[in-house]
Length: 163
Image 1 (cartoon, helix red, strand yellow):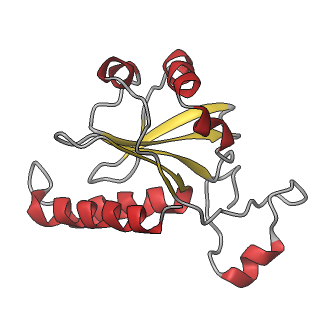
Image 2 (cartoon, rainbow, N blue to C red; image 1 turned 90 degrees about the vertical axis):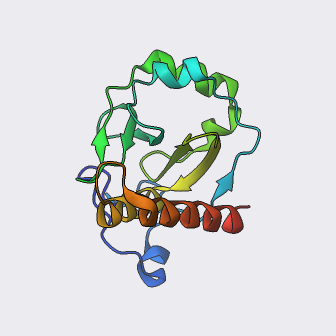
Image 3 (spheres, rainbow, N blue to C red; image 1 turned 135 degrees about the vertical axis):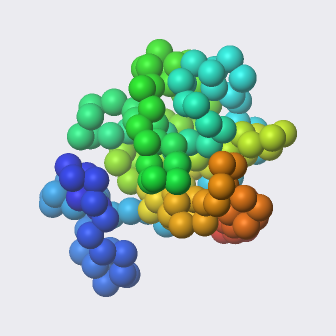
């Protein structure tokens, strides 16, 4: 991952071996670990404080911006939220597992559609895979049943792969 330009250059194992994320190159290795967080603490007021207009987002520490950035999916691609640092700090202090996220390459995936309250720490490429599903499958005003089924299938696969 080229963090300065927000570009994933290559995802093959051979290239991944070359980049150890120790800062020797401008590229960072995207981790493969996925962690489902069934005991994650996030109140509705905290979520509202993040100023994310939909019920799904990906939050990560961005070296490029020097802060936590929140992206949410849309039919046109990722949209950056105007996240306030105070809101994030309150959530992070309630959830110590967030301190272990690797900057630029993994973050918190939040899914709060309907009654669902699911939280994961995932590699950044998984976030963009989810955004790709939404972008390519969206139909009509609400996304359509096919798109929502694809999203649920994606999240179920994340749970199966989590450690």
